[in-house]
Amino acid sequence: MDRIRDPQNDDIKRLRGSAVLQAVRPYGSGFEPATTKGGPAVVDRNAGGSIVTRSSLPTTGRVLCREALNLLGPGGRFRKGAFILTCSLGLWGLSGNASGVSGETESFVGTDLVAYLRRANEANPRLRAFENHYDAAMHRIPRAGALPDPRIQITSFVESVQTRTGSQENVIMVAQTVPWFGKLDQKKAAASSEAEALWFMYQARQLALARSVSTAFFEYAHVGKSIELTRKTLGLLRRLELIVEERIRGGGDVNPLLRLQVEIGMMDDREKSLQRKRDAQSALLDALLARSEKSLLPWPEWEIPETGTLELPVLISALEANNPELAMLDRKISSAQAHRELARLENRPDLTLGVNYIQTDAYTGSTLPDAGRDPWGVTIGINIPIWGSKNEAGREEALAAHSAADYERRDRENMLKAELSARYSNLDDANRRLSLYGDELLSLARQALDITRTSYESGRATILDVIDSERSLLELELNYWRAAADAWQNRIIIQTLVNQPIAGTFSPTSDR
Image 1: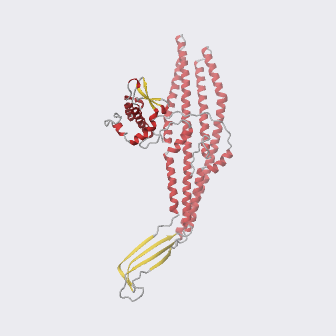
Image 2: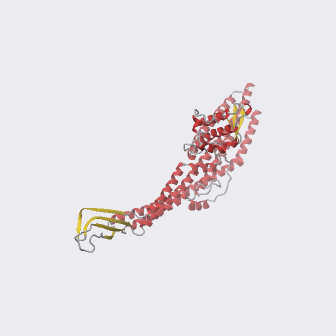
């Protein structure tokens, strides 16, 4: 243990302390020594028996695990307690770096859509911003329904006012303004409707985020499938290149080889372009998931969607009932209605109630029984709303705002229904293409390619025929998986429009 506490080693010294020891105790039983070709190593049983070497750890973890590996004696003998604690510290440092000790979000390595959606729902900063906007609006409700602050006023006479009961020195007044009946209720109703509108805006943002993540997820998945199919075709063409080269060595024409090499070059260029597209799609997903790692995301896990039957009238009814954007606009209309009523009440006066207290010095020469007593009184006042043009302008403003909110709601409903109809048509077209390619064209293209290859080997077809068959099969396979991605994307967009669970299980919107 002396090696671990070496004060000359800053990395080890930085992790000393009881808190560190408590943090690493759960890891202690999962590490065992091992020997590899590269020297001593550690087997992490908590990670399925993976081998941890010096080179696989960052600086801090590498330093500490080096200390543990140095504790291994000849033939695998080691001081067990020191070895386990030191390796635990090393991997604890590694996990600290991965999880972001400085405030970074935890790493993400999910491969299915639900994992992506959950991560985005938990980590996306724009979503957190909308959530905090709603929290702020909720705190405005009690303020809107509260009375104005009372007012206290103190007057000290520079020259005392002489009265028959004594000289008046100071006047203290306390007053409270009470708005006309209904004004506070309407202010509170408007603030409550605005807070509810922000809540539904938050839900709409959750659905928009789920839509963006899902669309990017299947674009990324399609890029992965395109790279896989392109590499497969490229491999077949390169094997065909060997056959053509063999024929040339036997005295055959060199022109087929040149044509084939051109096709190989074009296919290789397509693969490289797809790799660049992967970089862009991975970066987009990183932003949506608030992922700070620089490495590319692994390829998603996905399958061909099942072609279910959806009815457009049912979907439209669900949109009208469940879409949070429409609910948000309904709350804005309610808020505008409350402001209209509040503008109408501006013609009513507000009351001000108060108490006055006058401090009086005793007048020794007075024989009155109340000499020197401090008088007090009750006051009541009202404001007089005599500026009719101002109040009329306020009512017209509130009416125009209410009409604008109503028209905005109608327009948004029309746009959402139009988008729903378009996505329904796109989904139907994607399902049609899936059926066409999967049930008919792909099998025909594979048969045609097999026949063309056989004919080429027997000399009854040219290399161009083989290239055309390979290219046709690749394009059909790419179109088939493009249709699959389109079907998934349009289905999920429909689910976000009607606010239904995505992928059958994940509900993107939160309950209050």
